[in-house]
Length: 423
Image (tube, rainbow, N blue to C red):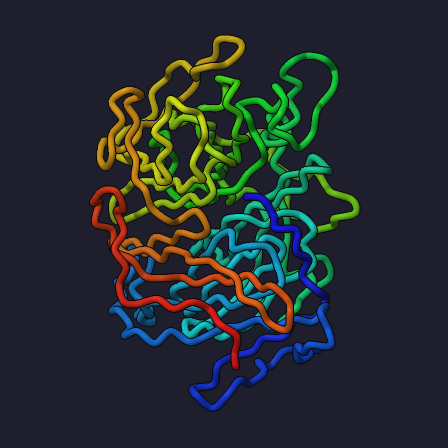
């Protein structure tokens, strides 16, 4: 996803609606109240969800009783980039929202519990690892040709405005495979053209990374893997950018790679290669898989994308991988030199385009998609509000049920409201 260009000020104010009694300021170290006299200090808005909670379903991984999930959770309104992804810690009753250059932690009522600031790169999709209790997100520094998985220790995010570099709540792991594909000099002229779609460079059209999700090894060998999806530039004149590219990593071995985030001197500590690299033929999209999610209820993978622009493709917004089918060795279409690789299959359901053979749906999920592994999902809603002349980006997790219907396979559970200023 593209960043909005907004920069998070060093100090943020969280304003919460206090049940009709007017706004109150959330407790936060050094947090100042937003006002018209200061543009650098802006308001963050979070409103409690009012819909009736839906009874939880206990995941396979735990028999512990989990808190019920509300029909919506407000992630607030912030002077940041737009919402990129979400993650849920069911046991603790916490949600995490990625706002491009800001991570926000809330409870199930939408009350801000903490935030991590100071990112100058692009923080994208998120997922929560139940095994180690940490949040994993994609993090890009394209100008530095550096791509990472950011690992957040959610238990240590206890106050607002925690600096990503100085507080020790974030570690990073470098992804060499992504760098090699992003910087590939495909026309052989000895010049890498940088962060632009208007070039034959970038292998597979790689623009970096966005979608991340935990799930099983795609080759069926067993074990949990972190799957990382490429961003892919929209370019209608090339044929080698019509696949989604998925990398898989066994993160149990990552402790030795983790380093603090140092933006002035990006490190290169990370695995030399992924544990698996897979291709999904979808037609070209705009910036690839924005949100990636594994559904343990069905065993399928969901890929939410921005629609592409090539005339011959149907341009669906959601693709689903058939989790019952193993990858098959085949031709990776459109490459300048013949190439074979493990190909994944789309679920043969939903809308169908006979000309290309593609299946998919029209739905939201590009800004945040979380499977609750029981047929329900949190799907993100985004928007903007103006507070004291400052435009704030909003985000909300809204509970949906998977129906599989076309064109939109999700049905909302309960009503949703738009984030608004706390006054």
